[in-house]
Amino acid sequence: MTITAPTESTRTPDAGPDPTRKYARAAGIFYLLTFLSSIPALILIGPVLNDPAFVTGAGQDTSVLWGCLLDTVNALTAVGSAVAVYSVVKRQNGSMALGFVTSRLVEAAVVMIGVVSLLAVVTMRQEFAGSGADAASVTVTANALVDVRNWTFLFGPGLMPVFNAILFGTLLYRSRLVPRIIPTIGLVGAPLLFAAFIANLFGVFSQVSTASFLLTLPIAAWELTVGLWMTFKGFNRSAVEALPAPSAA
Image (cartoon, one colour):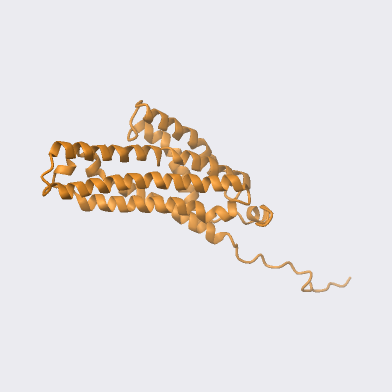
């Protein structure tokens, strides 16, 4: 029996670099940046949220401005996380992929409304001393702007992640681009977060409460886990290859 060396035509070609790796890494980094920006932002804007007399007092403008800047980063990275993976997940389902991008855009827009509202309060505080305006009317207006921001916090980070998890989680679960346990956490957490949203909307308990924290925890775990996995592991190579070709999709 004669053994011959494999020729060029019979050798299995190297798989080569994964063309989707950069998209997964970018999306993962954007997901992680939403965590790194949103949590300190909530702390930094605390003075304007918790002090009804902020607009007529000495104020902590620098802290609030930094918090607004971080919330802006949060909004932009939310959009970036969806745009980064769009070209990959649309091969699983184009309509759901577009819906995911749209839900992220809506979330970012709502967050930015809250940012602009707080920046308006800072401007009012800076101009109040030399304006001769009535303190009571200025306080009422400023507190109304803070209320706008509080509502955006409910309808933005408090609601839109429900749709994000359903859309992106379903895409990842069906395509197996990441281990199925990861999107499962998001799909389980979505109805829990929606329940918290309804309870907050009708005043059953506040958005900053133990009950809200427990109902929000699964969604937070999903977003952190998928962000870490995409950053350091990327997408399952065989699952990517099983998706329809871009032209067919």
